[in-house]
Length: 392
Image 1 (cartoon, rainbow, N blue to C red):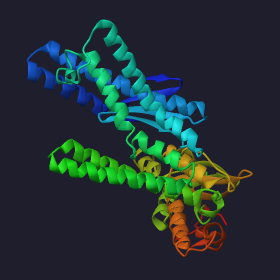
Image 2: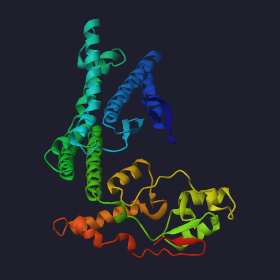
Image 3: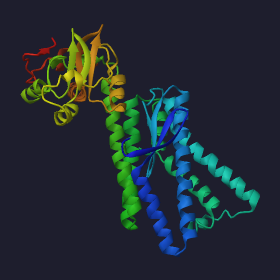
């Protein structure tokens, strides 16, 4: 959120404005002013854009507040020039919960459009769609039609639009999650190809952009579903690294640099009496070399803000937490004893091994064979040295 400005919060959900959004507002103001040579028209056009993005905030709150009802927290809502993004902590595994969360946003747009239509009916305003050609003169009618379009566009059955998630949730009532996602992704990619062809024939760059947006979104959603399928039901212990270097509280930055250059480890647990008290990540280590003396104890600069997990915890849930917190390494602790490290790299390797084993078409190969392929015991070039320890 370093490049975003917090503009408020609703029900504990922070609402942020990305800095690029300000460029959009400035561009819209300049466009209307150049077209009309009127400050009033420019302000009116800017007001319309502001109104649209207020509706976008309400749309995202529709998702976030529905998710909250089902016990799914929302990290934040961020406004970008191309729309809004509600960052949910996780996607619920129950299909109907995902259905209601996904449809919550478009329903808000439909309610707004209906409310504005009622206002136009009472005041005798125009319902003509061509009000969009002069939005500065017909702001209410323009907002009504724009909300109707937003609802319709978001309900298209293609990822990453809400309609793709609606389709996936309905398919998941009869299929497993991964298969439902793949089917919905295929539908989305077919729509993307159709949009692309129409965009080429009509020489419409907007349709081409939408086609690319939908195609890439479908690919990403399919990949995430694959990750979820291969990690679901798997304990953390099957993916954690057990050969890694630790640093003691008395080790210095110079010692940490030696370990960084000597092996393949990027993040180092800092331990005291066998208990982890900090985590020195590579980025923090490099930054500290500029800010502190090389003889500074690592305990003074190591991150204290880190979360841990247990070896028996569900891998899919921890993996979602890692993505939500943008965390690449998580210490695995049992009874205050450091047992291993869970890294995104090792999770990816576990998925690749699982996929390769499953391709042999053996029943239950993922759960039965993974125990015979201990990723964490492979040689990885990490060495022990004075002032460090290798956890068995």
